[in-house]
Image (cartoon, rainbow, N blue to C red):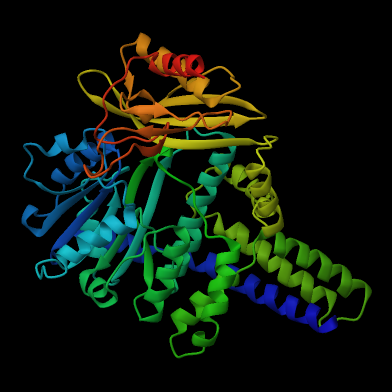
Length: 518
């Protein structure tokens, strides 16, 4: 037991010193300011801007217009827009637009960012004109000097991520706390690590990389946040650390951003897999692997409280004053870290609440708890509130509007929430999800709007499968292949390019007719 306590103290004491070093180094970010000042004078690389979009017509059009206004030479960059099974009319943006190379994937379901981007990279591998890729989500916005800033940052680094600026006005308190922590993490942890020459995690939302590196690896890995962490480690291993640059800024509405962090179990698994290979001359990779086991706030606090109590009352290999001193170093590091993290007083207060959120998140995602919640969900016990968010399109008769639907189940009561920009409408509580959706359809019909999902399509037929919510159905359309000989199984919230509006009450009439037949 004594050896375990000794190792625990060494572990947290080393981290406390490391944290203080990061905080002090972050005070001097002059290199970024100098780089920003002279970004216009660097030799211009040939850049390929790859935009990924899935039903983001409004923000995609805005981003294209912002690229047209760049202060970067127009003959030094190309724009590629990936439309991944978009049914919101995104392709109409490019009807008379030769500025953008459009890659439209449709009639094969939604590929996902990773697969869609990989298919484009396969097409561009032989393009020797391109020097670097800029991958950016269609939900982002940029300033007029974005490409110049990226070009300047590529002089010293081959792989880059940037700062995400987010509006938090319409967020609830939990999401606001997470947004503040994200801002703190970027402007302190990521910036300080880069200033020290260490690697940060790649962010597929805005990710810049030299083409020669992609050609060498053969791919990018944007499946999820865990795969992005794994890809970042691979880059460190082959000598191309991902660096953070606060000059590379993108703007995003909070509704278009998903807060993500790698799971602790995934970090530990990666550490286990990389443990043997980290003993090498590549210090950046070794440190990157060790950073996977960096302690969180609660580990540090509980460990220090326990060790201070133990060293004060019993024999310990270091004196109580030494333990207390290292704890003070950690506190000092945190105080210093706030100086250059771009946080106002309100954000600093909210940041102090993040540990409370993190402990709840950790408990919820522990394997036993996660398994219990999964069993409860499978057993159809609805003691907790579940929410499923779906991107949908609403037709006004003249144009299609990208919106969101949230299917909410709270203690056996079903609701549907309709979200368009900053406006929301939530149905009343119903025993069945299908009834809540019917109320929303009626509400939209009153305003002349049509919800373009399977449940509102003339090709859709509901399946009476004995379930309460009646979420399943069949599609009689020949989508995606005319070789289909029987109706295709689907769900009420799915959508496709073959949508044909049905009469509002078709579902009710169908249920009545089926009841008469039975």
